[in-house]
Length: 115
Length: 110
Image 1: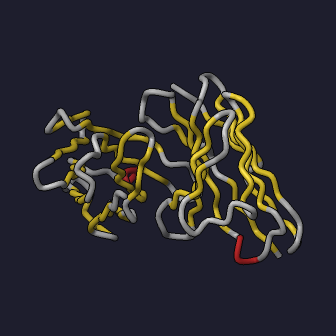
Image 2 (image 1 turned 30 degrees about the horizontal axis):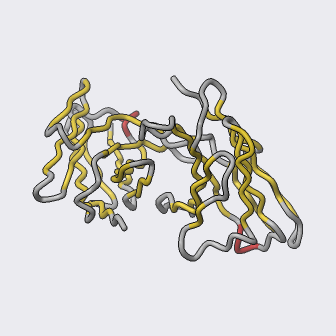
Image 3 (image 1 turned 90 degrees about the horizontal axis):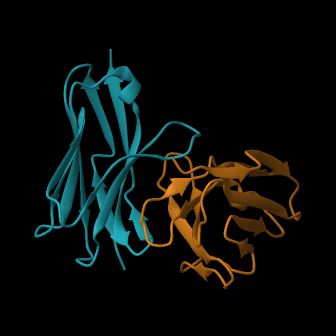
């Protein structure tokens, strides 16, 4: 099956620093990738949809200048949390899909803790 | 946009019993309905999915039913086992625009 790799799996950083999270599709080309945020015991909240070679589409309420998304190739999308603050602490998960297939394949997630 | 509601939020069953989780959706244009199982701290795993041209799909102990008229779909797990304990999410959407339910924490007691 399709494999999506996400790194790092966890990160601890100081308030005010930026953190980059990578999401890679290892054995397929993903023209579309998605980024989610998940708080403890809650559902996956879609943050943005990332299409290769174009600007990401952000969900309402998600600050695009704070959560920078780059989908530079068909196998890599990155999420950068800029000037992170404690309230940004969360579990971030990416997913990817084939261009014409809705099946989503998820990364393993990144637990971000901002001190 | 699509809005997905999922019930119950928690479900506890005895090993061997059946478990049923229900979801409703709002957008009649949605045509893809997957279910995911997520263990603590891990990625969601697709366990079964159904498309709008199908009313029911079964895979061993897991089955999903879809009622497009009523805009609801359900997950059925039979002969539950302790390893079925996890959080289950339903989702609905199309064209790569998927929305998730709030999740159901299933506990199977041995």
